[in-house]
Length: 144
Image 1: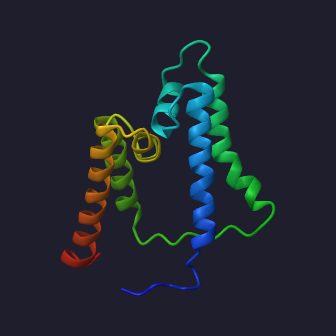
Image 2: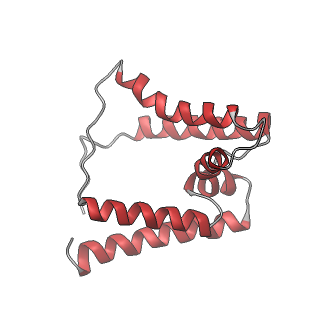
């Protein structure tokens, strides 16, 4: 394995992680809510009166922040080494997994682990293990 040193950005990554951590902590301290994307979005799909505006603002921020960022700098173009069928299958599997796991990586991995939730520790370990196995199988066994 080699590292692409031109794409290695430890300080920007650290800053991003700190900002995400502060935002998640503020969200739970000020609003009493977990900043799990699947839960926030799921609440919009089954709207409850008086619970829509903050969820819509949260999702608007997720979509608007990259657009705002793009006004000031060039957005890196992602490289996706999968076809449409693979992306659709991956999206469906992630959606099913977040439903069965009662949350997503942001809810369990960022918010749950910081609260020392045993369920979130198990869920995050499962997410990571599934990712490791998937990459191993795709790259080394079937050669995708």
